[in-house]
Every structure is written in C-alpha cells, then in structure tokens.
Length: 192
Image (cartoon, rainbow, N blue to C red; front, side, top):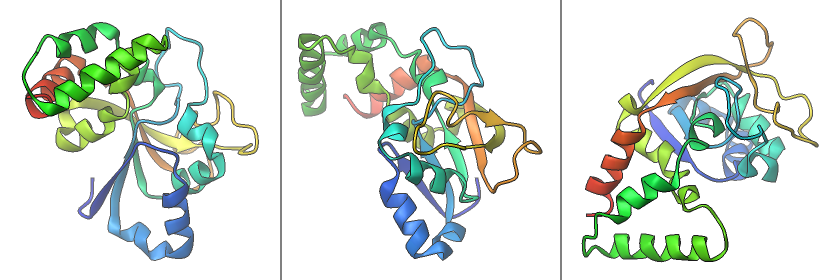
C-alpha cells in the first residue's frame, strides 16, 4: 500500500462514495480502503454465493468506491464464510475479566438466542485486523465489472483480470487468510 490514509470500511459505502463525489481530490490521499464486504469469486465457497448485505444495501455507492481507482483490499465472503463458531468458542475460553470480553459474551448469547451464527460477530473485524497485520491475508489483483447496480447479485463484485475490464477499479481480493493468527490477535489485543 502507498503512504496516506487507510480507510477500514465495515458498512455500506455511502459516506465514502459521497466524499469521493464531493471532493474527488481525496482519492490521492487514501492509500487503500480495506473492506470485509463483497464476494469476488476467487475461491470456492462452501455456501451458496451471494451479494453481501453491505453491498446490497447501497450498490451504487459500492460501484463508485470500487471503480474510483483507490486501492481496495477486500476480505470478502470467500474468507468470512470460513469463520466458524468454534473460533468464537476458542475466544470464550479466554475468560478474562475484561469489559470487552463480557460484552462479546452477551453478543454471542444474543446471537444464539435468535439462531444467528455467533461467528458472524467476527466478520467485520477481519478488515481491521488486516490493517494491524498485513501478513494475515494473501490477495489476487484484478478489476471489478459492475453492470447492474440496481439489482446486484452474487456476480456484482466478481473479480476479473486487469486487462478484461475498462474501468479504474483496482481491487485486491483475499484468497487466503490466517484464521488461527487472527483469533490469537483478538484474544491478545481485544479481549484481554
């Protein structure tokens, strides 16, 4: 990544798209945008492919940001779908007295009460963890071709070769991730 500001995006990209629209000169000041959104087709999924919630919520904003020319480091569904409840259980074994762990325990209990997989609580933090330790993920470089922002599907953020798409997208999609190291990072830096 270049020098400059690194943005960690864990939500729909409406604010980022608006900032780019209002002040396009900020693109030169952003070294990269790290996101846990999207499905890029760089690795086989064990679940049905889909357009992720953050993308589906504001697909036009996603298109603006991903085609802005800013370097995007995406740790998408290929990676986040491999998070497991066993990883959550490993964190829960920590049993420190920290306020953050107590909050996490309540969030896990809430998730289980409503039949939500507790591993979903670990999704957004993958982008933040990569900001701290860039050795966590390996990426494939390509471009995104977003043809139909009004009706995004599982192919909306599909990664293509650099010469196959004629827009400014500059996307690096994660094709591997060091989950064990990630969980240890959470245990040592967040929940202690």
